[in-house]
Image (spheres, rainbow, N blue to C red):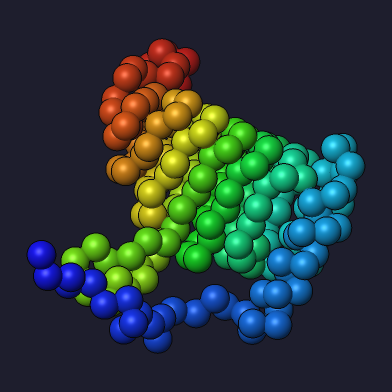
Length: 188
C-alpha cells in the first residue's frame, strides 16, 4: 500500500500561539514549578499566575495544581467554577468556561487536531465553549469546536464529538443523549 502521508511537509504557517516562543517557555516553566507545586488550598495563587499570563479568571475559581494550560492567554473561566486534578486545557484556540461550571479530574479539552485527509497532516483548531452550569465529568474528552450549553453534562468517560444542548446529559463513545438533567419545571 502506498504511503500517502508526508509529515516532512507539515507546517503551521497560518497558526499563531498568540505570544512569542520565549513567553511560551516562561509560562511552561512557571506552570511546571510555582503553579504545579503550590499547596492544595492555594487557589488564589494559581488564579493569579494564570491572570499574570493573560487568562481571564473569574471570582472564587478553584483550580487544582495538577491542571495544565497550554496557552493561558486563550482561556477564560467564569465565577465560582471548579477545575479538577489533571484537567488538560489544550488551548491552541480559545477555551471559554462559564460560571458555576465543573471540569472534573482527567478531562481533556482539545482545541487542536489535524486534517485527516491532508497528506501534510495540517493543523486545524477550533474553540471550545462550556456555558454556565455545565459539567464535564471525569475523564471526558471534548473535541475541537464543541459547545456544552447551559446546564449540559458530559458524563464520565465520554467522548464528546458534537455540541450538547442545554440541560441534557450525554454519555458514551461517542457521547449520545441520555436524559434531561433537570425537570423542565425546575428550568423555567
